[in-house]
Amino acid sequence: MAKQKSAPQRLLWAQFDALQMGSGWDEEDITKPQILLEDVFGDSHPGSTHLAGLMEQAKYGVFEKGGFPAQYHTTDICDGCAQGHDGMNYILASREAICDMIEVHGSVYPWDGMILSASCDKSIPAQLKAAARLDIPTIFIPGGSMRPGPDMTTSLVAGDISLRQKRKDAVTPEEILDYKQTGCPSCGACTFLGTASTMQCMAEALGLTLPGAALMPATMRDILAYARKAGRKIMELVEKGITVSQILTREALENAVIVHSAIGGSTNATLHLPSVARELGMTLEPELFDELNHKVPHLGNITPSGQHLTEAFWFAGGIPMVELELKDMLHLDVMTVTGKTLGENLEDLQRDRFFQRNLGYLHNYGLEREQVIFPVEKATEKGSVAILKGNLAPQGAVIKYSACAEEMRERKGPARVFNCEEDAYQAVVDKQVAPGDMLVIRYEGPRGSGMPEMLMTTEAIVCDETLNGEVALITDGRFSGATRGAAIGHISPEAAAGGPLAFIETGDILAYSVKNRTLDVVGIQGKELPAEEVEKVLEERKKKGYLPRPKRKGLLKRYTEHALSAMEGAGYDD
Image 1 (cartoon, rainbow, N blue to C red):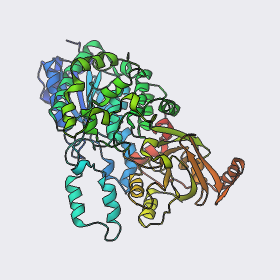
Image 2: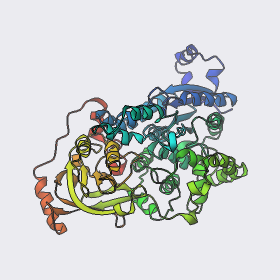
Image 3: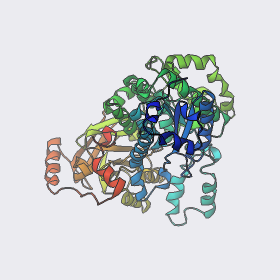
Image 4: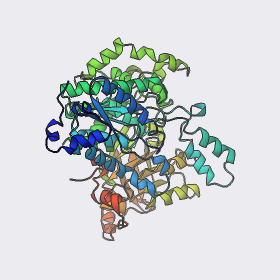
């Protein structure tokens, strides 16, 4: 059995043992290797409500191998409940709060190892950041995928319903009730490749989950079995002394970016992966995303970039199948939480018939693997995400072009400028946005308002027949992983930091090109001008200053005053 890390501290103060025994531990328990089980269990949303059950299984696995587990909870919140009001401003900041709380839980007590579990957008990167910060033996258990809605729909039917609710006689009470009763049919992460599903995949691609763990259906026995196995496996990592820093290497991060490119993952990964890397003193440059997206074939036919849902993706082989297809591009010698390398894990999965076992479930949907995960030779495009730069985004901006129609990947048009999302959304609802407009939403970056997502507005655009495929959205805010259409976000420097975005006006001409990786102001008040003339006008406007940030308090105040730029991961500065 591994030597217990807390043994020296127990000799410093007798109350240590007494407190644990007062919590239900006995004399033998307090001498065993002790494992922190940290999840985001709570009644907060479907991605968290089932996690206590997974951790119960993990507890059994720890007990079986001679350790003693202790459960801690730091629940998360859901973007879906924060749409359209100021609650959304807290969502990204919650990543830092959850990370800090896990640091507290993991630092006051000298744990021998840790198991983490979450399903969704900010809690997964929060837990990965905390794991990197604590650097003890750690395994992450993803919370899996929600069941599909009627006719293979997802919870994002909300976009259409919500828009029609605000337009007179456009929706019936029956339609609204039907959606409420079927939009989220089970626990687990929403069943499209949004940020929640993407970050499950990133955790696996980093080597921090058991192979095949990401996106398995949350209601199947498999997820319970994986949780039990994680409990057993953490004791092996403790015995071998394999910590997060031995797994989370530069090569592992590159593997994650490659997988992200191949599956068409959320643009939010360009925030979260650099922020995780920063916890270990590494810099993950936005240029790396762009470089690899020029090379990596896009294999995942998963909504919103493709046709199928995350449950089908797991049945088709999930992340291991993508890694198998891309094995010539990946670092196969990286260490993982199995105590083996990525290459060895893939060999074990093949021997165990992992890639054959679930195909019958896929056949229930009338699908074959190649319809969900394209073989490399059948991939029709490279990558999924581009980093754009230009005089409107000197430090960069991001677009998921895999979820954007070909004809919208290069555009030029007049700016329609709003200083908050609420006003822009209302303009769409009121049909005050015209086809061809470049809809600009600013002061929504990390320091502006906490970097809320713009899902209400992007969904309103694509659900409006006159605007879908005709309007681009440009913002220093972020997007949902479910965002479709021409959506350019993360503009850096942001408006609240005095970036050029603060000084454009309605009627200026904006242009972007995914092919050329550019985003520029090319004209002033309807007249195209040379770049140097545009620069002079922007400099003159800059003298008037930009909008002061509103007064805030507590967490949001701390976050908006200290947040890094989106291109640096939007965490706290040092």
